[in-house]
Length: 417
Image 1: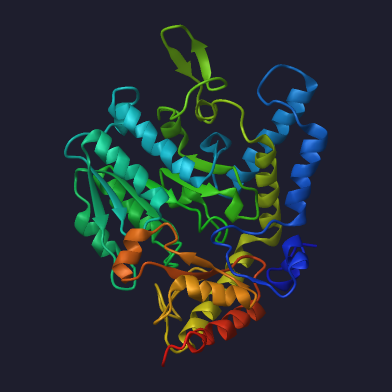
Image 2: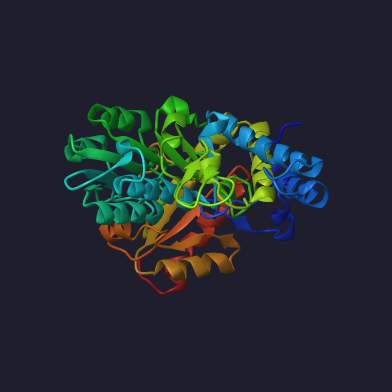
């Protein structure tokens, strides 16, 4: 029988049996893994482990089949073709692959459509994770392009009108998150793609917080590139995925070079394979890829429509829980508005790290800090926030446990109402 989100799915994740009474509200950082994912990797390592895409032995063939079968599963899960999914170390690495490839193209080492120069513009929002900001900062510095920022308001939210105001005919790249890891804002991706196409710009989507939680069809959304990580979607660490439209991936210079990515090598030059192999130089994270495929199997069995419906309920409950606590302020869309299943909180008079420790002492696991989004936190006027985030296994009882613990923070630290 297919798992049902919430308490039913929770039984599939061994973490909860090992930590009874713990409300795990840190899925936006790293999700827990179900037994089926852990077992899939274990079986592969014990029984089918071998080099992939190397040699002609039966062992190599079986390992390669498992490796590529996982790619097919992940591709199908996000509406991509098999050649449109590249294995990377993680989503940060995937975003760097695109930026570094464009840097090489700008230096004359690849297709001119990716080349940037003086006067060109790269647009990002002020709410971006550092992984979708710093690579573009570096690309601008290398090429002479200008980094242009879409501003956010006091709640940390950006708008399409704000984007339109900064996009010009010189805009070459628009990089943005599908779902903000701090505010929970769900971006209007199709509208952004339309704006980008109007000026001939490429779109690069950080899909880390959307692919695990929403039905996502990247081809239908129309983005040119996207990045997401296995460890945020019931899978292992050490592997992520870069999506790119096939014709773009085949033309983008590979960020790393070496064995397995080439067709012909001489002492003077090398020619590269089409995507995805052109980007997968060296030995890959084979067992992690197999586990990534198993994670997709698990989420597909639950059904992403069911996951999304469950998390809409949990997300609203989290927002309402924060709103019910005097002295606690919710970052991002208010309770009742569309938002992802996460809630970043500012508790007046108490540092986020102290809030997190207080909650942890009461069995509530959350994330504290700037969440790799320092520029956004500067706009919010704080160094850090406390973030509670949900997944397929999160229950309303955990949300209530979070609310009860949060309501005791200011009293414990002696902060007056």
